[in-house]
Amino acid sequence: MINLFNAHIESLSIHRVGNKSRNEAIFISETPYALNDEIVPLLKEYFFKPFREKEENYFQFAHEVDLEYNDMFNLATELFTSPSDCHEVSKKITKHLFEQSNHPHIKNGEVYVAYLTNVNIDNNVVDAIGVFKSEIKSDFMQFEEKDSTLEMILQQGINLNKLDKGCLIFNHKKEEGYKILTVDSNRYDARYWLEHFLSVDAFQDENFMTKKYLKFCQGFAKDVVFPAEDKKEEVMFMNRSVNYFAKNDEFEESNFLNEVLVNPDLIPEFKNYKVDKGEKYSIEDVTSFPIANAAVSDARRSIKNVINLDTNIQIKLDFINPESAEKFVEKGWDEEKQMYYYLVYFNKEQKS
Image 1 (cartoon, rainbow, N blue to C red):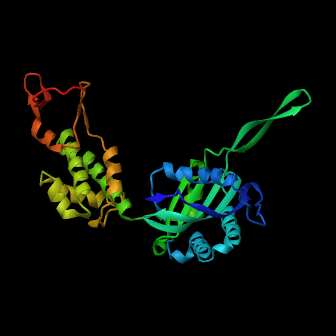
Image 2: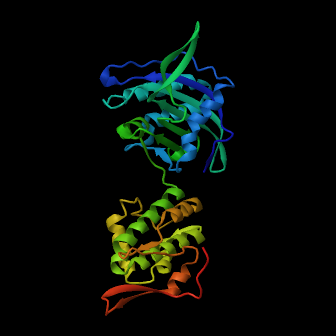
Image 3: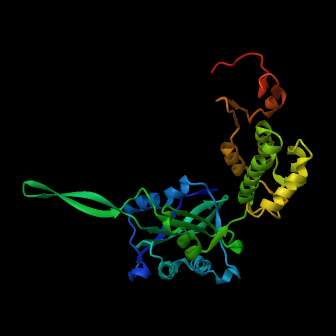
């Protein structure tokens, strides 16, 4: 978890990069930007708002040979080691971004490199580096009095409500490649920012593993449990899975399977499914890990607990009290109508 409320912008450098394939130039400012009390709150909202509004999916610098060959990892380390050299390092970061700006779809724009202090991540107060890019210009009107007439002037500028691209590099978990958050509002050049400029992989911490394993369970429920059992059991399997994660601090696969798979015949099916699909979810070799409570809460909100029937009827099962579905909902077959049915037991109807 991050908290940017008390984050402070220690220094800010602003440059501009063009598109190399269109022979557009790079502009490097000779000095840092002179921050003032009027602009700082606007910049903080512009830079930080996208990270407060999106799910915290962390990344880390990576390289197929060794982390020391990742350019941005080395530049971040240089800056964290010597924050007073922020402007000089910002020039290197901007030049590195310019070298990646050679696809025709990449837009030119301003690059902001900020050194941040008092950033809270995972209950640790650390420094951070912010690299942001503005690309899309918006039209706006200015008005000027000329004699007895009010003149209308059309201008272009940056919309402070939408950051086009950005990343926060936290001085945390350096050995793994630092923890990084990134946003990209313009998906026409997705590989440019993540792969070419930053060169990052997903940060495989407990939050990542918890989300990925529950996603894998959703796939198993849909592809295996539903065809083998029914929709009710698919929903209940996911309910038991989420409850297992909610009440345990550590995940252990054998205990998980014994607890959540009511039908023991599905245990080998689960293991076979993991062999086939585990790599897709990045959990192929995972059998134990710490559980992230926040990720469990997010998963619970996203998992559907509704049985949709072809007779335009929905049955909603309660994830808070799953024993009710086990005890009071039965599925059967009506020979006369040649249709399946759900039988629901109750004492009285509740008021809405």
